[in-house]
Amino acid sequence: MRKIFSFLVTTVDGYHEGPNQEFDWPVVDDEFDEFAVQQLDEADVLLFGRVTYQGMAAYWPTRAAQEDDPRVAARMNSLSKIVVSRALDQVEWANTRLIKDNVADEISVLKRQPGKDIAVLGSSSLTVSLLELGLVDELRIMVMPVVLGEGRSLFSSAGERISLRLMNTRTFSSGNVLLTYQPAAR
Image (cartoon, rainbow, N blue to C red; front, side, top):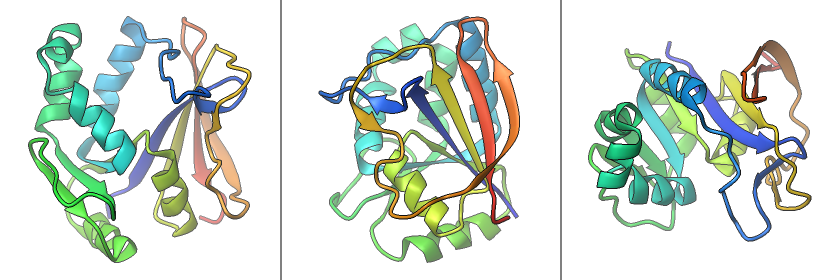
């Protein structure tokens, strides 16, 4: 069975976006880019919530993205993508389909299909929902060496306690730290 891993970035003080929804603080360098490529190569499906999808779809197909980070852009644009949203009626980014209803059933069926892993990129609310449904197998949180002081908490949508078990840590030369967890109930 395929696994679902979720990759999220956060500040040291636990925010995934600033108080005005800004996302200009991640520390991205060559080492991070190499990690991003390796992580994308583990998956053959990308899973997004609406807000993250709209941001990704507005950037990765552009000429600027292809010039700034051609290896990541090529993967982001060519991989199959799924958007979970009740608000959207259509999706336009290449290789994207929309799930509006029966999310748990649809994702469970997808996990049972042959293939590489399924990656949730960003999409903290979707990650929480999938954790609460028992569908996330691995949670990867990249802590960036930045303090915002305020913003939106990474897991602000959690309606209940979610216990995790630390599986691995990786320190980057930039000061970024990757924490890899498994849901404790597994």
